[in-house]
Amino acid sequence: METLKKIFPYSFKEKKDVAALIINILIQLVINIVVGVVIGVLSLIPVVNIIVGLVGSLVGLYFFAGIVLSILDYFKVLK
Image (cartoon, rainbow, N blue to C red):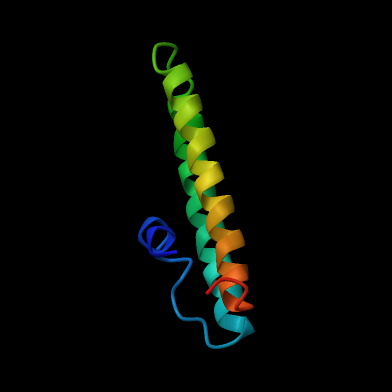
C-alpha cells in the first residue's frame, strides 16, 4: 500500500467530502486532457510518433488508475 501511495500521491490526498472527491477527479481529468493534447501534437512528428504514442498510452493508464484509486480511497476500500 505504501508503494501505491508513493506512485499515486494525489490519489491518496485527504478528501473530506464528495465535493473534494469530485474536485480531485476533475483535476486529474484536466491534467490528462492537457497531456493528451500535447502528446497528440507531438505525435504529428513522424520520427517521434511511435514513442510518443506509447508514452501517451501509459499516461492515460496512469490517470485512469489514479481516478479509480481516488474513489476507492474515499470510500475506504483501501486501507
